[in-house]
Structure formats: structure tokens, C-alpha cells
Image (tube, rainbow, N blue to C red; front, side, top):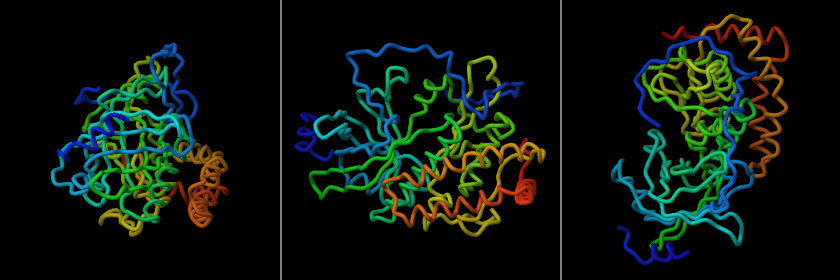
Length: 371
């Protein structure tokens, strides 16, 4: 705790950006979008390194962040950075402490939220596991505003990540945290937060490489994977995503010959979904929907048989989706019923052929032929 004591006494004072267009080549992917990681070399644990398992455990994680909270909340300069100390409490008697730099991230939440999302940069890295590499920086999602309502929003968004983890392991893992923002000059702020798996861990875990290019479209993505994302976002009522510009979509590619040539998309940021149902989640004009609980399909146009197969795969996972919601210890019974009822509107339509046909009609009415 020496660093924390020093903090309290002092004053307040890969990935290359790609512009190349992915060439779409024939590719064979494992069943339902799982990435084959068998070729990744397994590393023996280093006894001198402490491994955290941040994204393997399900329990809420206690995290303390010592910094100039007042300066952070003022958001005077978009590009400013703050020094601080992060303590990850692994148990009541065990913790890991790191000096960190805190930077703002995001756009809409930065502008809208009292507690903006942040990127935490570790001055000395932490390690997730012996086979998943070190963490040099990590995304922190803060509760947008004070109060239990906004805490509920964050928990709901966390559960959307968990729902997509059910669909595929080619997804960002998230860890729910109880975050203490500590400044010696003011009362501590204790609320919910969420840590998101860094892109570097996905690269190592799934043997992928991140691609950053604003020139990509859905046509450059693996068809099965982008169709899955489009249907998932329809299920949770998420209109806030786009492959062009990589808006709330990260894109990876694989060095494995059988997987190379097509983008592997992974979605993130689900605060505007109908599952979260935040009071600030108002669709912009031109989308053709008026509320965040109206579903809108934003995927590629496909044959009816393709949509039929994808929808049946989602229907098969219905019980797993419901279990994710029902076992959450942090949501009230009424909140769970609300989410389940909302998802049921999607699944009830899938149960009968006529309902699926109507949903496919809806998809084909709003789908796009991206260039």
C-alpha cells in the first residue's frame, strides 16, 4: 500500500492501423462461429508472475481507483490523462496494486455521462493467465450517473455481454466490478463498473490479429459471423453498431490458412439496447424506429434458408439465454422478468414456422447489399 500512501500525500497534480481492404477469399469456419485455437502454443506458468483470472471468474470484483476524482469528472480536456493507483482486491486479505494512467474513451457516453468510460493504462502490466498474455491497458465502463437506476443499466449491459458469450467464444468477456473512486479531498464514490477484455487477450486467446480500417463493410466479414451479430443485435434491440467506421465493432483476422481472408467481427458497447432500456437511449431520426425497444435488422441480405438456419440456432440457445438472466444475483426479480419478457417477444415468434417467416420477411425488408 506504499503507493497509495504516497498518492494521498501528494498534490492533485497491433496493432498497426490498417488501411488495406480485406480481400474476401473462400474460408471454412468451425461450427457456429467458434474459432479453432488448437494451433496456439500452450505456455507453462511462470512462478514469478501473479495471474489474475479477471475474465474466468464470475464473482463481482472489488476495485479501488485512487485519483483526482474532481478533475476526472470535470472533463475539461478530452485528451487529458490522470495519474492514479488501482487496487484489485482478490480477497479480503489479498490484492494487487498498480500505478496507472487514466484516459477518457468513447464518444456519446463521454458527452452524456457524469462518470465517463475510461481506459486504464498500467505502468507495470498485470497478467490474466499463463496462456493469455499480459494486460497493459483495459477498458473501464463506469456507471453513467449516480443512483440505483443507472447501476441497474450497467448490470443489464454486462448481461448482454454474457448473452453473446453464449452465442460464441469469439466475443469480448466482461467482469462486473464494485468500483470505489477514492480522492482524499472528497467522499469516496462506490458504484458498479465493468472491465472489458482487451483486444490483445482476444488475439492471444483465439489466435487472431486485430484489423483497424474504416474502409471495411459487412461484405468483408465472414458471412456466418456477421449474420450472427446482426440477428443477436436484433434480438437485444441494438441499432447502435456499424462495420463501416468500426462503430462498436472490432474486427480481427486469422493467420490460420483456413480462416484467413475474411474479417472476424466482435461487437461491444450495448448500453443503448432494448435489454438495457436506458432512459437516454433514444434512436436518432432516420432509423425508422421511435423507441429503443423497437427491433431493427441492420444486416446483409441473404436467402431465406440462410436466415432460417441462423434463427433456429438462436432458438436452440433460448434456455441458456434465460439462465444467464435468471441466475444473476445483482438484478431484482422485476428486472429479470422485464428482460425475459422482452426476449420472449423474439423467441415466441421463432417457435412457429409462420412466425419465423414473418421475421425473415422483416429482415429482407430492411437488409442491405453492402458494397
